[in-house]
Image (cartoon, rainbow, N blue to C red; front, side, top):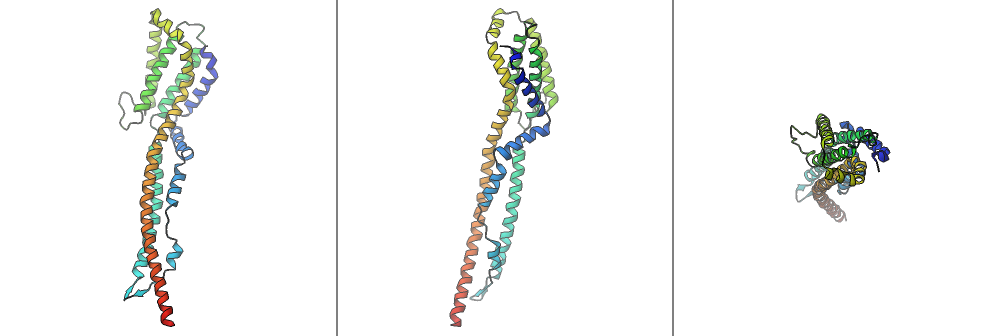
Length: 277
């Protein structure tokens, strides 16, 4: 096998990765995952819709009554105000959770890693044309592929950290370009100067594996960030459930108070009927 055999796949990889170099597209990718794949917004709506909030019409039909010299007017007004407060808080909590989802799922390093893979795929296409001309291409490409694996794995691990190393910042495209160019030069120099037959034979014997890895590696970024968002989904769903549960407790307390007032109204109505009879 040769690099040229994977040219179509490498072209696709270069095109996809270059699209995600723009920070806006990278953010859009993780937000689409959050909203369309993991359905966070729908989950928020379902969670809070489950809150059995008292019907507004029921409250409007509550009539103040006086029992043993005490009026229920103040209690009815308090229940009405509490219902309005809960409705406002539910809407505010929904919006707050949506914002938290966007913040948590927003990626910091996807753009830089996509840029690296775009350069890597483009360089692979260039080297595909040189493979039959220069004997050092397999050595060079193997070294670059190993370096790429090291760089991106480190990026997946450290790239989302709030505090980035000033010498290796995965949130800056300039660092990605700088390190790729430096790696390219170092790998080229090593490939031209390696004379160990044992090492060269080892690379040649594993060349097919390197080619397979080269074809798959540029697509790994999308898979890894999908898994990252999925893991964050568990945290977010826990927050949503927690907020919805707290709101449900308040709704239940309000429901109990309304039921008490309804019973008082019913008893008052029954007493009036008995007195009239």
